[in-house]
Length: 338
Image 1 (cartoon, rainbow, N blue to C red):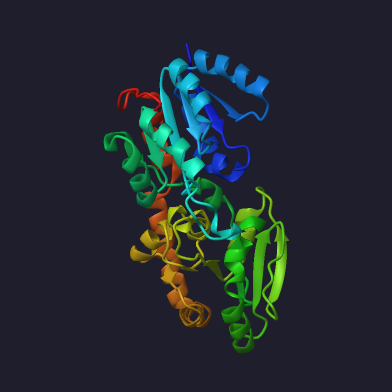
Image 2 (cartoon, one colour):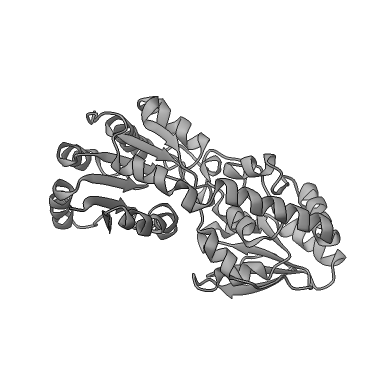
């Protein structure tokens, strides 16, 4: 009889669900684990119905979403095994929407979840520390955001000769890219034809810099990434962004293109491993990108190191068994909601 895993996800975070849950489903299926993925329901009647699914499941995974504590109590009472996975510093307000202040109501939910889960997977060490402050340290482990590298291997597109820098993401993260307006305008005067190719659902505001908007699609994102000369991964250093798990930068590494990134969150770990160039100030962004655009051999060596790191540490196939053990095994003991 198949093991039943119920994955309850955040309705507004499809990207997180895709990389932290969905891509592991084929592996789990091979091990007789049936995964039912449901977004947290909005209506109270649907939330009540969800409790029946919790009771029927062998394990329940909350991916990023923090339910109200009254619902968490009922779920904990019914769940045979309760696991929480998160890849953002969710107790803080997002920095693209203002100052990344602590959200007390969300912190209370987070605290309750950390205390009652059987196991917790955090996307990086910063997030793991947040979890360990609120619950038993032994129940927390780091599970990085990973990629299916085979998808990137199958695409054979090559970078264009024109100086095109790339960025991939959703419109809600465009403010991070727009912080590079000044260095991009300066580099545009030095490199004829410089273009910022934005793979997204909306174009950024980068002043006089030439911007090419490429609509994002899952079926074409790898091909579009491989056409650029280098990838951009800017982030401010704040309480919210330190929890970022580096998906954008990881995609550049997997695509085999050199990248320049802010040393924040998981990106700092990748930079320390020599797989990307670091930049924080406008001057540093200009200097790093000049190197990438002017020195093809250096760019190729950087891309090779990035690709190697992606394969060694961020390939989903290498983490699939650990994820299975965490979600479906016996790690820690049940707690109580307080």
